[in-house]
Image (cartoon, rainbow, N blue to C red; front, side, top):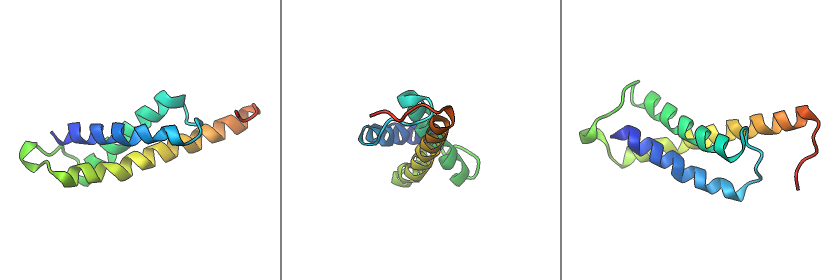
Length: 93
């Protein structure tokens, strides 16, 4: 059940990417995947490399996913900016 919470929090945080320029590696889909991967990865690590069941799922599981999602988005953004500068294409906008 915690896995579902981690994924949903990743998607919720991903919605805030509309407020930053689209320079994510893979565009908006790449940002979506990075947010989910980051939230699940950090949740999995904090939970001791296991997925807590329904009886162990609470608000803390949702809060654990937030920094993981932000880290995933930051990595995707940094890689996207690096790829954009490396290709020599002008910045949009």
